[in-house]
Length: 74
Image (cartoon, rainbow, N blue to C red; front, top):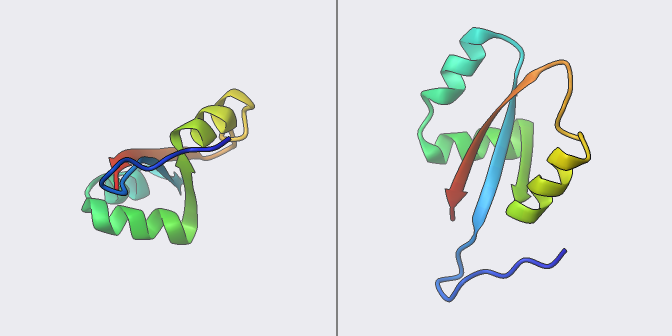
């Protein structure tokens, strides 16, 4: 699965952070994009669009916790 960055050296990425309760979900939803990126890189996952599609379709994202995602052009 090869993904290419555009001429600005940017691409769409999917940042996923796990949430095990509603207060954490609210916390994650209120983070700035920069802080959410840090959170996902430390405690979650980062996917290319094709990588996310593959993980979702293969049910690798389904677990006992809920996930909070952001799709960002970075």
